[in-house]
Length: 98
Image (tube, rainbow, N blue to C red; front, side, top):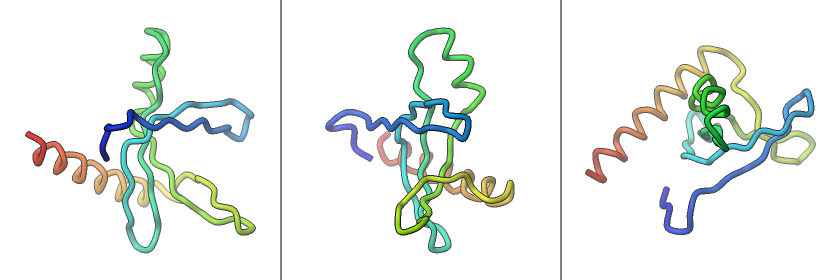
């Protein structure tokens, strides 16, 4: 993804009503499913520790009643598989840019 126009941010509301701001990193298609990777944003040093606890946030695009929503992967196995694919893609992109 190009940062030509600056990074992309989204704000999500979790099931408890808490808002979380995430920075878009990348997208990939796997087994007919679209997955997106994000990093939590950091406003200050206190938020930095919380952001490190989250690490890379992976969400998948799902349609509910015709509306596209972001959801967590259904299982730890799915999350691990997609995480590994994202890390491979990110490392490949870094190798191409160096």
